[in-house]
Length: 146
Length: 106
Ligand SMILES: Nc1ncnc2c1ncn2[C@@H]1O[C@H](COP(=O)(O)OP(=O)(O)OP(=O)(O)O)[C@@H](O)[C@H]1O
Ligand SMILES: [Mg+2]
Image (cartoon, rainbow over all chains, first blue to last red; front, side, top):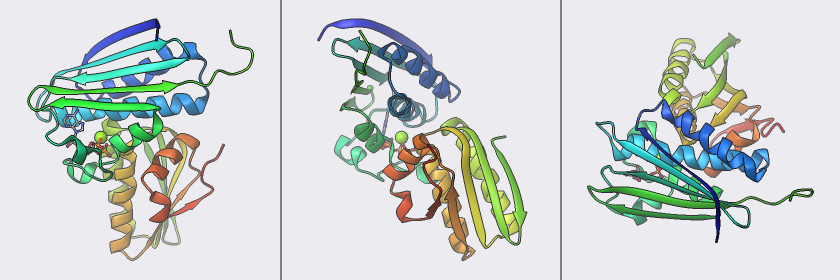
């Protein structure tokens, strides 16, 4: 699929950047003319991935979070969120609903939400090296658009 | 702070507002807990009308309030949930754990 547009961002794993990342992806996705529901799904998935970098990848430090997005031909938004943190020991386990290593403040639903809100989803991770989340969302083309 | 509340006849209503994410959730969770512990209501209503965004951090806020109300043998009720937070709560199966009133206000 042809890349029609792209953007790359890097920011430190500070919680104030969660809302920044959501706003950034919503603005970038706007050119696909998504519905409110579609933007809601995309913002939610990005919020989950970025929060995981902040909470889990760098539990006691601040490290870089990378957010890359592309618009692919066929009205597809392609998103990568990457960290160079702790990594995930057992990905199968991490994907299970309600599985969390985060205690009372987490519910273990983030990955489940990303998987169900996006059209495609994959994780790769290496212990001690970092984690990368790749997801895609097709935006329905509505009447009257190019 | 992202919370206002009022109490009447041992019913506590907490109106949440703004964006509920990991950045804001801890303070919201603490405030809701403090209100429940202070008023010991029979019914606690969380009103989502003015919540503009919520991710899984909000699920933990609801579960925490539910736990507290269970120990008081009281009820938790969620109301006026806009579509985006509603979808997140549904993904977590919250409607099986607590009553939802006037959910999904389009
Ligand atoms: N970027 C990451 N780096 C290291 N570990 C991660 C990362 N993302 C997820 N994990 C691990 O996978 C588990 C599940 O993640 P998930 O987002 O589903 O739930 P959670 O973050 O624990 O809770 P919630 O997202 O509901 O607040 C986490 O508890 C953590 O152990
Ligand atoms: Mg998470």
